Amino acid sequence: MLTAVVVSCSIAAALTAIFAFRFRTWKVPRRLVGYFTFFFAAELAAEHLLLPPGLLGVEVAAVCFGIALVFVVAIRATRHLEAGDDEEF
Image 1 (cartoon, rainbow, N blue to C red):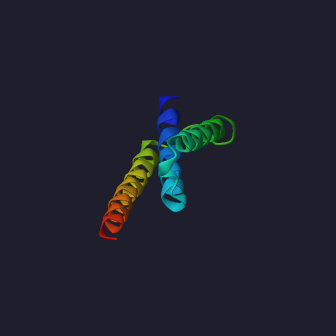
Image 2: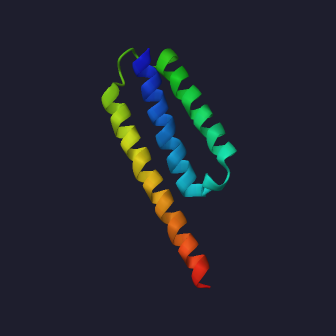
Image 3: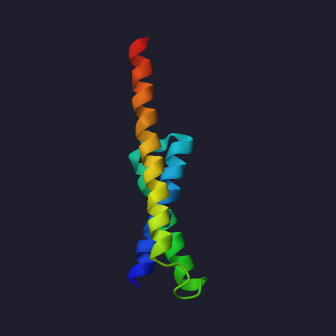
């Protein structure tokens, strides 16, 4: 059960970070919380209803958290570079 929650959280974090980077939704935190909640609930439901038990292990969670981290760094770099562009003009 705990592994399913961790994997669902990691997949939701990765999908939310990718979504935030692609559509620049980091400016609306409530929307990000909503997307994270939706992705988390959908993945947790899929883990219990569709996927065989033990199919997704902790390794999947590590990879997804790594992907989320890469996109969070990209978001922070983009915000920093955009703030630097505004100061020059």
